[in-house]
Amino acid sequence: GAMTVFLLALGPGRHEIYSEPPEEIPEAPPPSAGRWRQWAHRAGEQWRELVSVAQRGEAQGRLARWRDAAVCHLAESIAEQRTLWSLRKAEAATLCFPSSMSDDEAQRVMARLLRAARWHHGVWFAVDGLLLIASALLAPIPGPNALAYYLAFRVVGHAQSALGAHRGMTRVAWTRAADERLTELATLAREPQAQREARVDAIAAQLRLHRFAAYFDRVAR
Image (cartoon, rainbow, N blue to C red; front, top):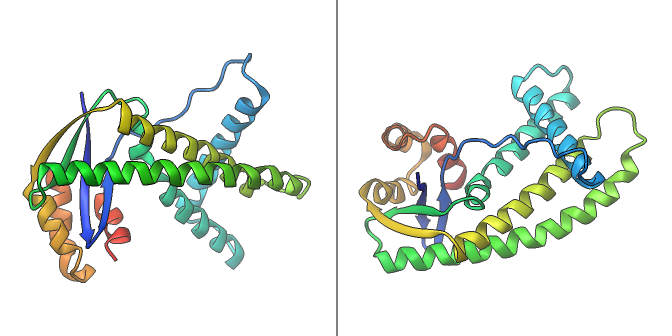
């Protein structure tokens, strides 16, 4: 079916898009694929393993705990790109927007967000690509090259995000639907986290968004 994307209003001129597409596990490239694709796939697998270990919270020692906390934080920031990643393959999508906005305003805001995302991720694709090349200098250091795995995952992620934003602008057939719950979330974004927590949890449950409450706490600041 059509993908569902939620447009969040977080304050004057502040908007974000959110969805919870299923997590994609990339298939291994065929043996005939180039060395870069083979290495990038292995690096992605290594990064996901590092995240899995970090999320278990079993590290011993201050440095290891700091590393795991950093890995978890970076993994969260990457996960927030999944909306754009999913647009790469979408033919149609529904944009749910606050009922306090007009249909035309929601369309303009969405177009602005996609343009900004295409530029942002295009620039960071280039920057992280150069950093990834530089990180090869750390390869002789014993132990997993977490920096290289992370940068490789980011390079692929930024490329997917830029492509998803472009497709969302040019190929996806959008329909729009106003939702009063998103208007309420715009009000809740201005309240202290402790006061809004129960209501945000309830709205997330109604929308069947399992990771939304934690995301909302990060962006509604």
